[in-house]
Amino acid sequence: MDAFRGRLNDNVAASAARIRAAKLPFYEGLTDPQLSATLARAFEAVALDLAHGEPQALLQRMREIAVVRSQLGVAVMDVVTGLNLGFQAVSDDFAAHHPDEPELRLGWERARAKLAYAGAAVLADTYLQAREAVVRAQSEALVRLSLRVLPLYPGVVVLPLLGELGAERAQQITEALLAAVARHSAAYALIDLSGVPSLDTDEAVQLLARAAQAIELLGATPVLVGIQPAVAQSMSARGVSFRAPTLADLASGLRYALRGLGVELTQTR
Image (cartoon, rainbow, N blue to C red):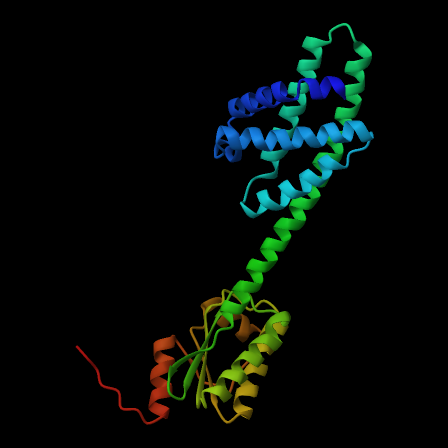
């Protein structure tokens, strides 16, 4: 522990130089003071763990690093490689300054192995959890965006659907449509499927049927627009037919709804 602390600043500098030479993408974005400060905090954590005999402070540091780096989109291997370069710098420093003290060097290598293994494991695990949290939040945001029902004209609303349709979204989609139809006193609800690549499950087909039926119960007319060829083929193969009108695109659906409302359409050159 004394040997490690006595050369801590020198090893921070040596580690920084090795990381710079490795040209790791994330670390290249750090200034020299930022890189040195990051390494110094990690080395201080290692010193504490050498004193306690167990990896604790370094593991906490790795958790903090994993959360921040994952949010920045940094590759976990960049962090692991930087960790290993720092440990190797210390090993080389011990070899250079304590060549005749094999027990001291062996003690460091044992401690290094324990710290490196535990640190990398915690780093990877926390990194994965943090990335999953980010992906989950992004997914939820996309779902919210994909469930925005937009008023196109008094009495006409549209729900643009994006991505795959599954059972999990059935209730959300139906609730969003019904709420919008009631809120806007809509007579027509356009369900835009142009952003749906396929309907691969019976659940997805039933989703559309339930949504259309729910709209009809409120006295509005559901209109399916923008059905892709793959979706049409899937529906045909399942023998599915809808009472709701199906039109080629959103513009056609809007024209259909406006005619139903008695709105005169004029063509412009």
